[in-house]
Length: 132
Image 1 (cartoon, rainbow, N blue to C red):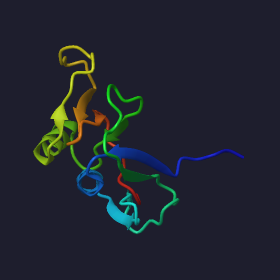
Image 2 (cartoon, helix red, strand yellow):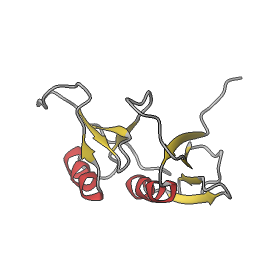
Image 3 (tube, rainbow, N blue to C red):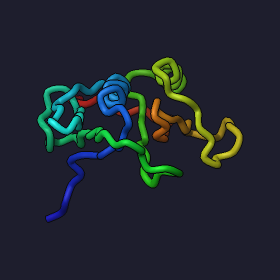
């Protein structure tokens, strides 16, 4: 037997707002909000601990400073990388330089940050949407 990832936890100063932002980016929905303000988002219609990992946004007064040790990689499902990049930037993502150097035509990813500064990458290849 092996373990599997059921949730990815993100510390945030405004858990509800950041969960809403990521739900919009990923096409997820809010699955639960507990009494401590933890907001869980996941694939539409999926219960927590389902086949796709959920994202749990935990309110903390001061998120971990410095470079984070974990980030998400995203792939567009129904549009090109350039179109998805435009959508993410319009939602409030910002480009981030984490040492990757100047942008070149050979680069297959964009490094971005969400509204609270959590880094993530948008990769060039597309993938099938959930449920496909």
